[in-house]
Image 1 (cartoon, rainbow, N blue to C red):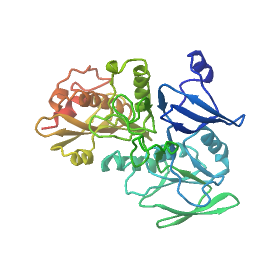
Image 2: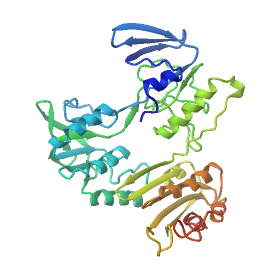
Image 3: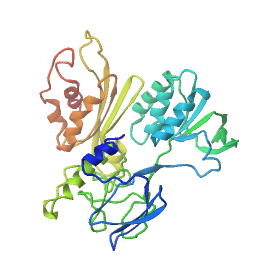
Image 4: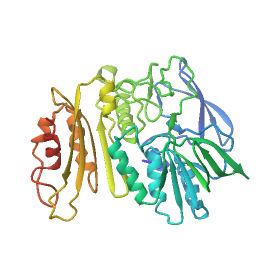
Length: 389
């Protein structure tokens, strides 16, 4: 995603240095060492405040041949452009990884009728880190309807390469011939150049920040897929999402213009995310059951299936709700939903409820607008919340 062109940046008085690669940073003397890739010149930049936003890079298995011409990661526009230009020459594509990118790429490639799309996932459920078994099964069934063949409990073990092209992949239980290999096995924060031990990082290299966006080194801030995010429930959470990056970046930009006593920290992540697969929309917010258990909450779960609007109206379809809440207080901790068109929009009240520490009893009686083209007399969100007892 691009929010500004070079011209847009210049008009906003942003001095953008393209094709300059940072090699190291001297945090004591506040110096950034970079190389002008076009001129081959080494440069030193001095700073008063430094913001690290180096993003993340795709995880690539350490195997010979991963630099082959038909191996792709879906991380950069030029890589995707090259894949699209070569699609007509491919018949069988292997996608390694059943997370967000793997699932979304499989869905999009299924639209090319000449392609056989095979998805290999190391677990027994797609998007297993985010969604429960019921939602995972629905995602699986939607992909199967689209013609995607899914192989569970399969890890990539090796590849067979000929003439700079991967011809076969060897997984846990099989060996398949392919025309192209797409890697979607996750990300690692792009922070290797920051070797100063004073810069606190997670084990994966993610830079730890406080609620304002500051790192453990004075006058150094960080944001995006290279850093953690402030989270309502989790400590030092690494959640590489564009929504978090955009909001924290804005927050840091504002704080850089203020004195410390005037810093503000309005953003707090609750891991909200969504995905569309086939005809179904999936959304989740707040804690999963596993997270609630790990954090020691005495929680309960309310599950329901409710029509989005009256059955006599066109487009009426069921919405599958799951609410995680505290047993005694009924405070909402998390929610998951899936269904057809506009299902994810029904997740928004739950996100608001979690941020506001509201209960299922609150949400059960909130006054949402009613009209048969849009909802039932009792909005589905009201009914789903009232199931919690």
